[in-house]
Length: 168
Image 1 (spheres, one colour):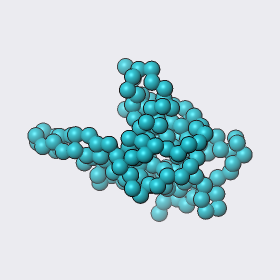
Image 2: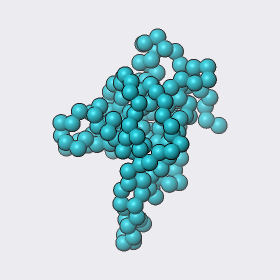
Image 3: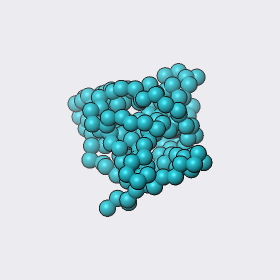
Image 4: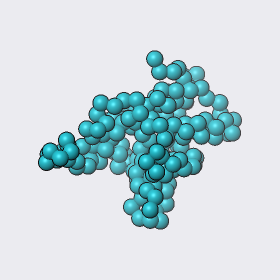
């Protein structure tokens, strides 16, 4: 059975129309020293086989960041197959969210593997609003296309955005 996941790509325009997106750095020891390609949209898996994917995305946003997303209109960005084979569905949401004080749910993991030492780690260790151009470098490769889809959808709605400066 194919694993599925669903999440929210929150966005806002700042500074002369530059598109900023809210992304989250994955927690745990495997990701601790990874910055580029170590970030994701807040997302998670359905708890039941037929759970509504938007409901999953909203629930997981709250679990991973510590509070629910703001009210607003969701834009479905479709599904992307990840290199692992997992299929991720994303929904875009315009809004604002305090990325400074997140509280993520946790998981247990034996680390280093085979050591017998089990630690508890946050699923997400930090979140940030980043210009789309920077987020392209930070996001895991399989999720970058969601930014393209968001920009295309905004343009179709008559909203022109800039991606901002490239990462140094």
